[in-house]
Structures are given as C-alpha cells and as structure tokens.
Length: 479
Image (cartoon, rainbow, N blue to C red; front, side, top):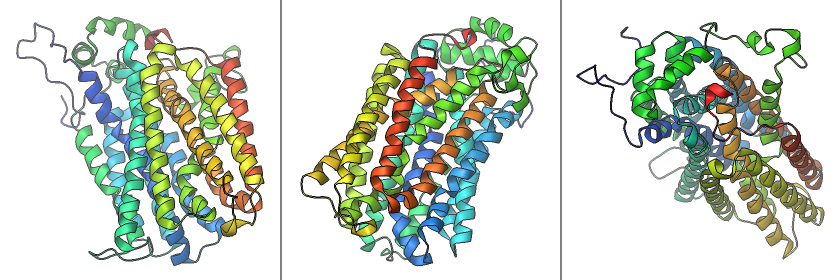
C-alpha cells in the first residue's frame, strides 16, 4: 500500500478468515466523521456572540456587518462545490484531513483580524473548509452505513451540527460573562470576541485526529479497484462483505472521477433544464432548508432579543436555551427517521415551521419602534419567544437532520459525492442570501422578513409532497 493511502482497516492475521464484525463499529466511525458537522455548527454559531462587538470595534454598517458574518457562507459554497470532485480523486478521508487543517488555521487568523477585510477573508477560508466537510461527511456516512440504520447514522451529521451550535453559544456566554461583555478583555488577556473565534481551532484539531483513525469509504475503494480493502470495511463495519458484488455492478463502466458535467446525464432525455431531475430535487431541498430562515435564529438571535428588551447576558442565555431545544428536536428525528421515513418528517416539519413563522409575523406586526429600539408589548414578547423556539423544534425534528440523510443516500453510487457537492453549494448560497439580507430587511420590516420565511416554509411543504421520493430502507445500490 502506498504510504500516502488513507487509513484502512488492518486485515486479521489469518487472511483466510473474514474480519470479525465490530458491534457498533459503523456508529463509531459515523460519529467520528460527523465531527465535521460539529465544525459546521460551531462556526455557524460562534459568530453570534461576537457580532455586536465586531460591529462596534470596526465601526461597521449593517451591510458591511452582514458581509463579514456571511463570508463563511460564500466560502462554504466554494468549498462544497469543489469538495465532491476532489473526494472522488483523493478519497473522502483525505478531504476530511485537509478541511480540519484549513479550519484550524482560519480560526486563529479570524481571531487575529486587524480589520473588516482581514476578518472577512479568514471567515471565507473557514467557510471553504466547513463547506467541504458538509459535502463529504453525509456522503461518507451513507456509504459506510447499513441500510436499516442509515437514517439514524446520517442524522449524526445534524446532531453534531446542533451540538456544535450549543457548544459555541455556551463558549460565547462563558467568555462574555467572564469579561463583562464581548467587547471587553478576558482575565487572562485578549478581547472576549477574539477568543470566541479562536476557540474553533480546538474542535478542528479533534476532527483531524479522529479522521486519521477511520477507514476509507468502501464505495470509493471499489471505484479505485481496491476490492479487498472494500470487502474488509464492509464485513467489519456493515456486516455484509458480499455486498461488494452489487457495488461493483452499480459502478460498472463508471469513470474513476465524476465531473460536474456528468450530472447532466447521458442523453437529452435524461435531463430537465440541463441536469438530471434527481439532482434538481437535491438542489431545491438544500436551498429550501435555508430559505425558511433557520440560521437567522443562530446568527442574529442575540441582537434580535436585545432589540426586544433583553440584556446582553439574558439574550445570550436565551440563545443557549434555543440551541438546547435544537438538540432535543434532533434526538426526536434520530428516533423517528428510520421508523416513519424521510417524507413524513419533512411534511410535519414544514407545516410546523409555516405555522410558527406566521405567528412571529403577527407578533412583530404589533411591535413599536424600529431597529435597536424595537419593543414588544408584555405578553406578545412571550408569544414571540415561544413561537421562535417551537419553530426551531419543528426544524430540528425534521428538515435539519433529514436533509443531510437524503443528500447522502438519494443519489446513485456513480454521481453521489459530486451531486451532493452541487446541492451543498446551493445550500450554502441560500444560507448566504438569507444571512446577508436579514439585517437590512429587518431594518425595513420584521413582519415582512418573517413573512418571506413563512412563504418558503409553505413552498417546502408543497415541494416535498409533489416531488420527493421516499428512500427509507433502500440500499444505496438500488437508488
């Protein structure tokens, strides 16, 4: 084996006997891979507690602040776009190792930023790493998982995301409390908001160490004609070494590296508007997951709740509570996804989001004042807080984890990683559009802003009912 090959399982001493299956082995390696989701969530939320301090220190307008906060999202789109073809060339595990290194370096660079330009640049670099992980992780977990557990194991991506969000908000809260505010210095030296951004280097290092310990995807190994290694991985972690033959047949006649152009299909009859229909379904699902406005809660929640009367510390604590609700909802999805299926979860979730967002439209339509002077009447503020948290619960129990499961499993073996890359890029671009537009839209009208999100939630419900196929329990080779 070439010394540069990614880690692989070690054959038993007696190679005439198949390697023994490791109970829970697929869970452990899926959990290790899902640390990439932790980086996604941590990076998404860690900026939350630093937004106001960054705005004050660098004297930023709402538009420039939105650009700085959302730079990671554009970087995410770029990283996602190129991660698929790269993972087909050098392997899923190597891409994970690269993303861990890049993310660690960018976390330190963001913390040492000397102005809005350098901060924006480092945030974009961090986004490239996280975007790459967001593509490779769901594809890898799907390819390493038994069909009957694929939904639960695929949901570990979203579980890691929400744990990362929770950890970031707790870190922000602890640092802001110890310093007396995100703009102040912590007792051991340095501004609190800079330590918030620097703290992301620690999970990145952990991700790199864990990625060194997991085997390469068996589907990638078969594509590279490393069949014996693939058989060992399948036998040891999936418990079905005989699936190798089906994987071979599904990849017969396929190029070793799939390009973005291959998503067009083999003939004009295969495509709709230039792409295979299943690719369009993935793109629209990924975009809708963000267009319902979920990340507004995590990027700007502290600022929003301060605007309606909470102190900085109270607003940060409210954000922590919201992240715990997000975590609870994800556990609900993990428990249900392989029992009730993907489509029912998305249907119920879209309905819940539409209703709770409509409630927020009503609440903010009764507010007085604008911007930082916005005020909600007693009673209405409680309804708004409850609606926001029920909205998060609806998302977390459905669209949060289910999207990543679907992206990992809905495409066939030939195009999977590259198709996930395109859908992932769409998700990051939609995330960026929501994030960069929210401060300006909120200044104009919060009811209008949440009305737009309500419309997208209703559209998500209709789209799922009309176009989404159910994938529960199907082997990847049957897709």
